[in-house]
Image (cartoon, rainbow, N blue to C red):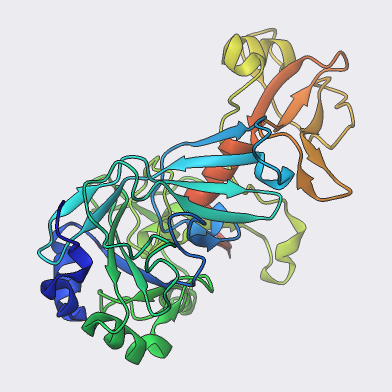
Length: 383
């Protein structure tokens, strides 16, 4: 059997400075941690938060819906769940990585809660029983640390009374509270403890700059003039150092930044905002293609030379032009719960044919990646 890596003298002597260096050497750009409770172990699964969208800082794979019909699951709240695969590696005191190939996040919407599962299954490390409830997996004083990189999570466990656990205890009050569950250890001094403060400082600087020439950053990060009507968004991104791209990840230190045009700063609530624009992943739009969708439900003003699909679609009301209505399938209003794991937001015809649909799994994933932390900034133009 392999030596228990977290019981090794190297791990017991680990300090925060060395841990940060090891995490960074493995590509981590953020470090977060959770002080484990007695229920945080391999049997009960560590509690991660009440919703996947609160964990936007943890990269995950595509979210999948699943429903269990097993009679072994007595709690009906656990039958509907969403799984997010996770690239998860344990790190030892020398910085070596050990893959946990079955690690995943499980979201139970009826509670709601997110649990970490499979984090030891199939992994070659010997955790020394520190996550086993029959041994030390209920002991208090354990600290689970995550180094976050672009692909996933690197994990290290500080056992009770270790040098690292005592050091974290000493600085715990000064660390930034991310979610009420996780705290962050700052490793980039330019960010400080709170990315929200940095964002607000930058937006204040931009606001005090008064009128700004319309511009954008090109793909190489170089400034160039931009005089089109939609220059407000590009100008804001350029001021924040954001290069235009189609990446579905947040723009600015974990924040999604959106600009919207107004005529008067005193009346910024008079215009509808676009929250997100994911494509449907079901219905005619997917099964028969975008062209069929637009031809069937769009309209033309020039004898078929161009077709458009537009319009505000309201819940359970047929739109006069498109013939479609908005529905929520698999959601109960009275209990405010998801009742079908494969539920969706859909546009359907009067005959209940699905023109386009967005699965709950896709919407949860999209919101988690890009919109859990968002700011909407009004702008005016004098072009």
